[in-house]
Image (cartoon, rainbow, N blue to C red; front, side):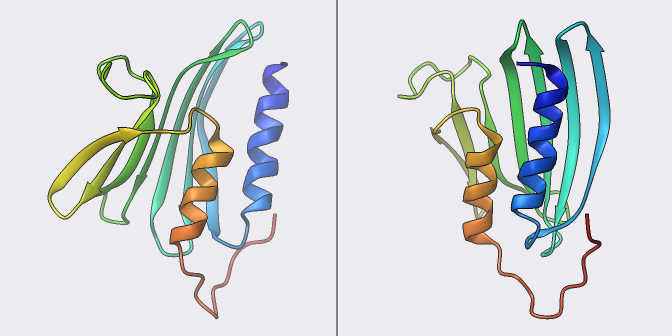
Length: 135
C-alpha cells in the first residue's frame, strides 16, 4: 500500500469519528521510498488525547503504539506490538489498560487504528454544545 494512502486513511478515520474529535495534528512524518514513520495526535472533545506512532516497512505496519491518555497525561489504554508480553494470547498485539492505580496487560484485536478509534468512541460522551473546527 502506498504510504500516502495510509495517511489518507488517517484523515478518513478522523473524519469518520469527527463527532468525538476536537483537533488533530501530524507531528512527524518521515519517509524513504515506500517506508515511513508517522507520529500524530488526536485531541477528543472530552480533552483526552490519542498519541499515534506507526512504522511501515515494505508496505507492512511493522511497529505501532497508540496511547490514549487523559488531558493530564494519565494512561487510559495503550495498544502496541512490542514483543515483551509473549504470554498474551494475541502476542505481539496487546493493550495496557489503566484502572485506578493498576495497569493490566490484555489481549488486543490488533494494529488497526480503526479498531482503536471504535473502542475510544464507545467511551467518550459527546458534550451537547461542543464547538469543533470543521475539516
